[in-house]
Image: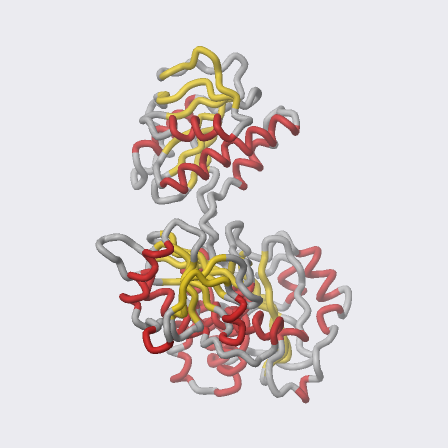
Length: 479
């Protein structure tokens, strides 16, 4: 089948809008699609950045060696609307997927990266659902003028994806009968997060409870009905949040007004926004949905990403107990730095004897098994220079250590002195690792003069997608 220009423009605009939007929501993200427009046509693959490469055996088993991908799909002639529950996901490691059958397109399965710091895949799947519907609509409408808005529309879908996920989950648990207006709640959360009070950003818990369940809370105080602050008065709510800062207390809202201040457990299907200065977290029934900062929602859980360090430690000749203890200690020190927002560096030294470094050495190394010792190490990390940790003994052996080394081509002039010093140092001492924590949260793991945690560089997406190959040709390496 020859794909006409309208088909290719529809595909490209949906694809590019989805990719750009998810990259803003979750960080650099790839997108891929397997689809067939009409029943009986061969499946086609759109994967310009290689997201699906490495998963060929599973894709072949799922799509070519069986009819598993058709299980549960309705007859194309009877599809009146999209229903994701009838689309069976492929199940690829490190990939979020969603697919189904919509009017005008027999089958679609959309894929994107599952980032290690993802709060929940739910909003991302709702975004893929929106892309599925938009692609089907564009192909059916044959309206070239409408295609121009597709990229922008899909790029700005973060609040809608978060909204749809919350509404779907609350409906699944409680049924569709709800009085919480989730769009209004999300807009208020963003507005409050952008409203400083005497130069300080919002802190504290703001809970949103179904009106029929408000009586279940343990209130410390309640406002009389005529005097309840309106939720959309963000300046007033921001002032009220000062009463619950750094405590277990929370402001309670019915989605329209602030009801009072309460403590204790929230009723089922309640939402809770935790404001934490310049960023915050949104929970549904204690499950993390997303974070918010800079006036936008994001998928990150804002926890330090040390997966790369954990993987790199498997290359060292350490016992399992040694490796686990070392990883826990480094993770805890990094978490302290993140919570208190200061930069630091940790030299993880596997040498025996340890490398001799310029800095403050300790008469007796400090073991890092206890919380008090870890807190001490984290406090010493604030001093200029790096902590010196023994990998084999899980001990702090020095602090304020200097990292030096000759310049080499792998430096990154866009980063600071601590980062580049660590690059030079690990280039000169290739057996050890350095973990660098920036004050604005990113964590880098250095080894052999390279940043192991640097995001991979993917091929650029072409200005216009080429006609996608059939699945069997793609599996044969013909892209």
